[in-house]
View 1 (spheres, helix red, strand yellow):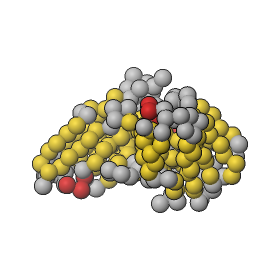
View 2: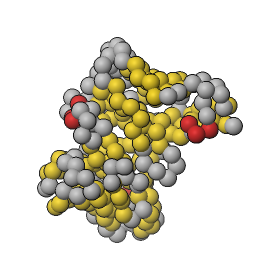
View 3: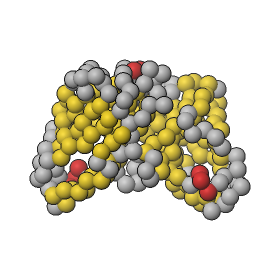
Length: 116
Length: 110
């Protein structure tokens, strides 16, 4: 158990509204990730963080922003939600075995977001 | 962009049968992971393979990394209903980022 929680677990919102998803970890891991999972697309990286206030874009970052003001919290914000952002969002941390060469991911339970 | 193709996309078998899932790419990876995901939960790491030709066994699951570190397979012997789930492979590139395959949905019927 990597001690990762996500909130909320489920959210329904309307197009054009801002949405923030929270990922919280309890084990002081440096690397944190946000993925989205859609049928037929597997897991796709949105943004990741390699330390407090250090973040970078993934392959599907358009329409998303992130912030990390504390080691334990990584926030994902949809500034103006669209229906195409309906998805299941997973937060992950990088495990300590093997570092970057292994990049073993430990995932939270996910947030199911529906944008109407 | 590094791509990983998994096959088959769906697999439905009877309890006790054997099966193999494949993960293929044209790219070389520094390592490759296999994950299993159950409905409503996040993926759970099963194994990491690092060396070309490496074989790892986890009870009834056998994982193999291709000699050129471009592909991998997962073989399950005598499948059980508890093996049901989505199996994902993920290759790690030079920048330390993971590329996930689209997954294989396995259903094992009692």
